[in-house]
Length: 192
Image: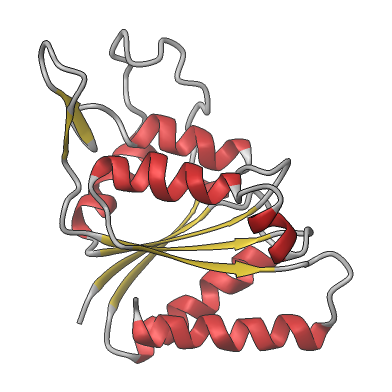
């Protein structure tokens, strides 16, 4: 049994990403895992980290709750759409506010190096895009994947990070979407 945290990074409740989160949760629970789903659109927090890391800000209650669940989880699942080659502002703002120094990483004094404070956790990134996957990966170098997988999660010590790409979504058929929902439910049952 694993402790799994699913983070829905889509700002709209009735999105395909929301449906993917729900079927992953169904599969993971069916396999005997303990699962928490956080829909970022339900949280109340300021997306803007006003002072960067130069000055400590008060952490909102919903961010503290999310940090507790991140600490609790053994496996994180982050689901998001690709917008302008990246993640929605809601997800980026969440990373900025939740993955703070002292919580997710710690810079070493007088060094360019840092300590990774979320070591021992694994993750799966599931993203949807309107761009054909092969174009997004090979022509654009999948910038959202690089941002989340390498520059965010691995930076904090979370690895391995597996990636599931779904697209193109725009003008996709209901059969295409149903097929992907079945695949994502199976990912939940395997929880890797």
